[in-house]
Image (cartoon, rainbow, N blue to C red):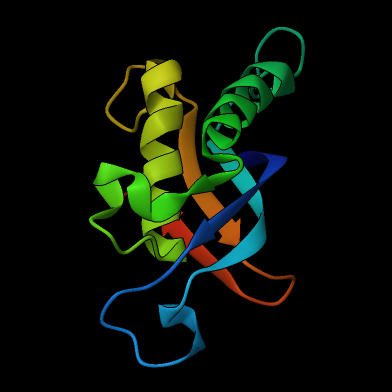
Length: 128
């Protein structure tokens, strides 16, 4: 099994509803995001996937989130946790590259998205 990973980031504000602590107040993060793709075979050029294609999709999604209040994005239902951000980014990448979906005919699929709120706090969404 081969795996590739690309990285992007964005800065955004959010607050968490139904949370009792500092994070219930508006605050911001410099998010770091990793997108992982996996597959069993390489193409004729010896690559699993062109980094450029996956990186372009991830950067576009992160760019759309940059300098926003994540609570204003309907899909987060006023609770943009790192877990919800990870699945949002996963789905947004698949909208741009449908061939990476698990049920696509391709051997390569988008395996996981990691969202770091800090260097030591990460949420991961894994495709199943």
